[in-house]
Image 1 (cartoon, rainbow, N blue to C red):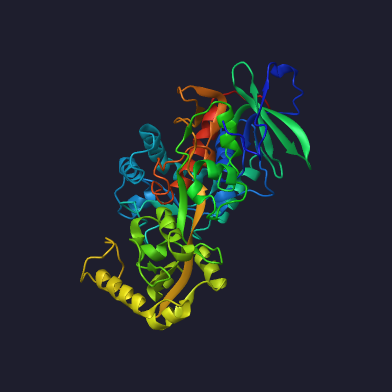
Image 2: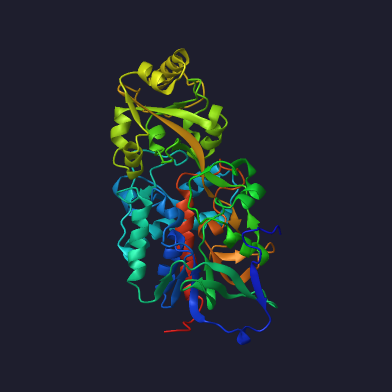
Length: 481
């Protein structure tokens, strides 16, 4: 295993846990208070055990707070009410097609089967309502199955989870409390707890019957990016700064199987230089992009994750995204889009000529690209890049925004089974250890950014969190309380 300078000592191995001066004893220790960690805590506490959540940051949220709170689920009441026929098998087929059949079949099927239950459980457990998104179809999904809160805002989702956790007497949360090392039995490799610094930096040894790694991935760890995803090590990073990968490194030090470490979710529509997310719905509803030469360069609809590399390969690593008033009105309610407007990233123009002038794009090339796109949208010609999904042709006034590609979060991590237990290469379980969030391998397979299906990151984080918490709690009798 390659040492990471941020985490020089990963595991404390002890021969006799009974002689260690434990400062804290708890049923379930959850490391990380993002969406996965909060869901895991809620699910574990529901079984009657006591849960201690430790978060190295000053607040809860992680990458979930930076998301659009979108979760795919198949066979939900909202879909039935909308007349949409969907099944876990259909959802499974879409995931596998996108990741080139690279994820574990049975685990992927299990997540798809749990998805509708999760939407219902989340509402019953927390009061959070997720509605079906039907105003556009994200690439890769054959039917409308993405569910989100009304604001399409991950921070609001986190606040709902946090409120429910704070009201549960079985859950305690400590902030500014980094877990620095796992503690394991030297003979069996079983995880016994963790070293945690809380109360202003006081070192505590926390003993837990079960430990859940609910940290995110390693997008903020340049050493790990150089090791696993070198093509994105210098790209703009849009994710949470706490995603430094220690959960994955702990698991690796314990002998866990690492899976799909070159997989990641990127995004090809982050405003530049503002650094705000321009929702991909702009493309899904009929927008398009050109490079600084005023030329389209790819089928924009093929997927927002792999599209990041398309943009980064262009001159200066940027593009100009173009759309019209119809699209503007359709996405105006999204808080991320509102932030783009507030920061002045989006410009309005009477025609394509004035747009070319503002962004200093070659007029001849841009007009040619625009006209060809309009003809394809009207069905008068096949699109040069193979795009078949268009909205109505664009109509002035037009909007333009300069965008770049960015890394959002990594998708590789520890191998887990359908109970979210961390596995070794031989399929055996590292005793007492569970994982979810970005610490567990996601469902993108081995295809780099291309295997990522829209909203699958949050799906994996939250559903695996629910499974981990439920299984951890049900697997033991409470030590406390």
